Amino acid sequence: MFPNCIKFCTKNIARGGERLGIYYLEKGASQRPSKVVYDRAYSSISKATKEDFDWDQIFEGVEWFHFTGITPALSDEMAEICEIACKKAKEKNIHTCLDTSGIAYNENNQIFLEKLEKLMAVTDLVMLDIKHIDPEEHKKLCKQPNEQILKFAQYLSDINKDTWIRHVVVPTITFKKNYLHDANLLLFKETSKRKKAQPKLSF
Image (cartoon, rainbow, N blue to C red; front, top):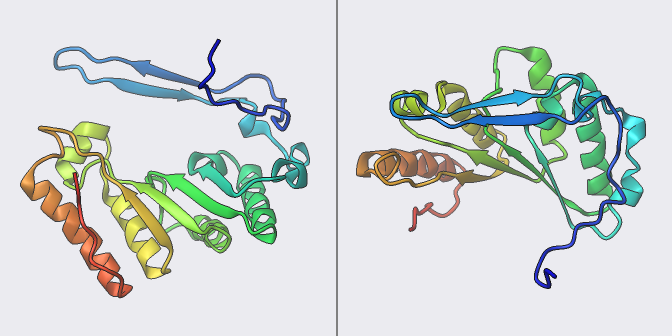
């Protein structure tokens, strides 16, 4: 019926916990913005344990391990699980990638930094979302500042971690000359420190 659809193997899905996490999107209207609510209390992933995952079986035939920033942030157990998974992936020459907004970065929390350093040691690439480069516009768009996100970008540069910046260009929101200039300036400054080619914004 669907000859061109992608087929997913579900044999390695771990089942457990009381429920699945739920994502609510409340669509805005007029002056009222849209709002997202994450309901992860007692969800399967937040209650997962190291024993739930057979990484040798899960990584069979795999070339790329992609995990989100929220996963290790759910619990101390999940942070350890992500580290174990990345270590096992590296043993098998599997590329590891962390996909995150960086909003939880806290340079003043030593416990957080220790966990982050362990994870970065076994992570090949970070995909970092920068929703808006301007602090005030970022607050309007995301209801929170971008200060920690930019600090996380600085941290990634300082540890020389390969990073892909995702910056969505939206007419009237981010597609303005001064915003694009500031975004390009950030990328140029950080890549210049690492003596790599000048980044370019293309459309």
